[in-house]
Image (cartoon, rainbow, N blue to C red; front, side, top):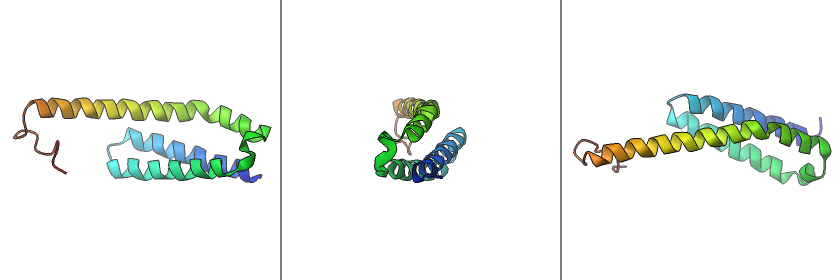
Length: 102
């Protein structure tokens, strides 16, 4: 298996792991999965042939919907959390002490 395809397999697995973590409520699991995606994406970028190798390029194009769905899901969850924090903050610091207290 060419190096590029192995790196793409790792990226695909990392994105699947992130999508699964985003379905849960464990922030540590989401952070860990995010680190794995970043590491796998860096490994793909480090392969200079990914732009010129048609097999690798086709695999990336096929993965694009999964990558986009993880990006959209992350954005939606971040927006939802922001809205929840805004609601808590609107009730005052005494009823939402953790909103700004890290």
